[in-house]
Length: 332
Ligand code: ASP
Image (cartoon, rainbow, N blue to C red; front, side, top):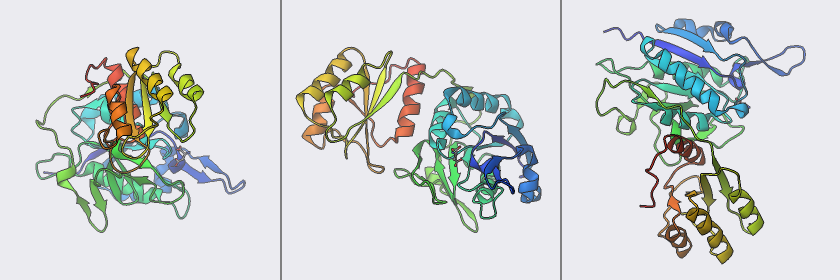
């Protein structure tokens, strides 16, 4: 069997698609259809690589749900033509997009690898080339039966492949910009690309049709707890019009102030139907609302524990579940 794969590169924007204007020395987006000029190494692949560019390319700070829908629909439309997809995306919100796509693409059996760069691909010391080339390699990789090695939504950055909905951008300068604190990497790209098979998600049954869930409900917001937080701050967040779910970013293993005004405000909101989802401000570890009295209090009033979810995954999951009218958010 030929291991030549067909790969679709989806360029949404971000630093990776920029180069330095020699006159002004500022960073400007280049025409991504000219990618071969910047990365002639791509010609060495045996794989067929096609390109789809978003027009105009966007800085990922401007990502909205509509763009996630466009990416998901594009993958659905071209699903049969390609063995894998590489999504070039700004790093700032890459973890949000990868999380969202992981929930939107149901029965995914092909790789969707998000990548980008800290330095533009048109700069000498860019990290973009390595990220792009290894991402293509991973998106194209198949086992002896011709099945994808990593049939899930992932993020590749600086030699590591992570599960997309486990990542966070944690470094604004370093080439190792992403971290997956609560889940091992899916692959390590050194001299060889070593796949961490036991941690990769494989379909229970292969051959199911890809389903794209584009119904997302964005009536969700985040409240980060801090010492000295005032009743007015909490009240103002809780009075957000049409709010359906609130993520509270709490301390440590899910602890929040025990002051009566705070508990009462949350309890009243839950009684009116608000979903309150508790995740930790810590990057690693998990919420355990039974560890301390401060957490137990939250559990008692009906706050839902978010386990070891990142903020990015929590937002995307709540958008997704609310959009499906899911009845699966329980306090159990
Ligand atoms: N602001 C850029 C973006 O997220 C940064 C990057 O691409 O790394 O689009």
